[in-house]
Image (cartoon, rainbow, N blue to C red; front, side):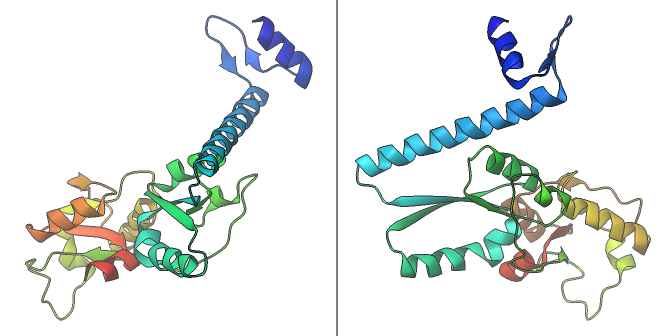
Length: 219
C-alpha cells in the first residue's frame, strides 16, 4: 500500500480503485503494460548478455500466424542467414492476439499476422508483406475432391472444421458464409492447428478452412 501510494504520487494520478476488490484505473492499466514491456526488455537483455558471455550467436525471435509460417518466414530466414550466418532464429507459431501481446511484452522481436486495427496499436510499427485469402479445403478421399466445379451449396452439407472464435479468419469466414447463404453453419471442430486440420481431412468428409498460402503448401 505504501509502495502503491508512492507510485501514484510519482505519476500524479490514481492507479487503483480501492474497495472490497482492487481494480486498476485506465492509468493503472497503462502503467501495468509499461511494466510488462520493461520487464520483458530486461529479461531479453539479460538473456542476450548471458549468450554473448558464452560466445553464442545473436538470436531473433519471430512470432507468426500459420500463413506466415507457410508462405514467407522459412524462405526469409534462409535468405537472411545466407548473408548473416552468425544470426540464429526462433520461430513460434500462434494466434495473432497472443502474438501481439507477446510483442508488446518484448517476448518477440517481430510478429507476422493479419493487418487489422490491432496492428495500428501504440508503440507498434507495421508493414504489408504479402496478400492472402481464405481457402476451403477437403481431403483427397472427399466426395468433392475430384469434382470439376464446386458451389457453396455443395459444401454446406458436410461437417466443418473452422478456425477458433475471435480470430480474424473466423470473422471473415462467417461474414462470407452469411453472404453465401450458410449463416446457420456451426463447426463440429474448432482448431488453429494445421496438423489437426490435415489429420482430420485425410480420413473424413470434413470441410476445412485455412489460409490460401497454407492450402497451397498442403497440396
